[in-house]
Image 1 (cartoon, rainbow, N blue to C red):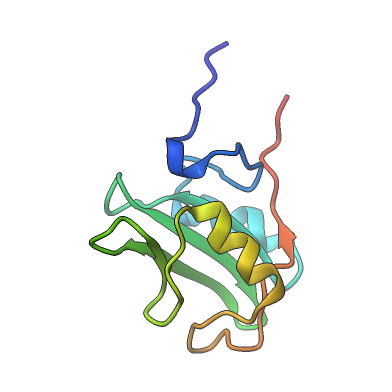
Image 2: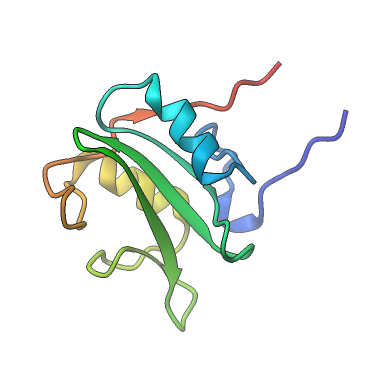
Length: 116
């Protein structure tokens, strides 16, 4: 068995991190979930970036984490900077998302990786 560990900025190991999951596979997982369910996956467009996939009442939303010049992580355009992705996720479990169309949502229900 090969265990692929996430890069340093995703540690501590989080069960909502799904690695190289495609956008469509993320939507398939989220289809079974309730509103405010989420997961983090590798970006399909850039392998060094990450995306947040979220179930909203309108369907699915995919938001990229961007990195500032000093290496901080930002969700969308208007989030404060965080030193790693788990900090971003933790913050938005108790704060509303800074994303148009998701202003009423928080990250409430992590979609956990199914470990065998």
